[in-house]
Image (cartoon, rainbow, N blue to C red; front, side, top):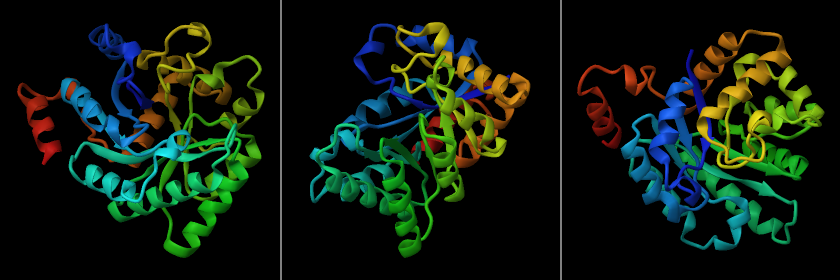
Length: 279
């Protein structure tokens, strides 16, 4: 059985001391690929270095809405240049809207729309963060799609209602569930996990945040994506193997990930894969 963790933050300090051990655990859990998200372009070099250590990692580049105050007139060009500089970049993000405590809504929208433009130009998906902003997000995306054409992507760490979930399914997005789907009182998220078409489902950890119920209160890590997959499979009354196979296929299709895990490449294949990805 294979799993893909579609959203990690392994560059955070909480992983610095034991990242090799964390890697060993995700491999033991069947995690064959990971997509490393990016909070701001300044993280790019560090994320590249981690991906060079662990060839199963692909990554994104973008600016998180909570960092929208860092947006400048050169940010769009910087993200475009970075995303074009490395073949291991498979997405733009994470980007989006976070209105939980926002006093800069218009700046967030400006930064998000600009990153949608980059994604469209490079034909890459967007990793979308959306908190307390589902209606505004859906309206912005509909307007953008009407004016400039659709962009593919994923609503990551999804926490919306089934009605809100349908808005983004109608826009063609994938829906990714994190450890929050395992929380006891997350009834709305769990109902969404039941209703998303199987071919649009993804799973993630968003580590080091939001550890799933069996590990709640601890540092989250990619191996724990298995708990997310187990919960979603149970909610949908399908086997874990079925859920894992479909979400792995979905992630591979959305992010354009190679079919063969690095651990299964012939001798020398990992180095060759890394070299080819950098071209």
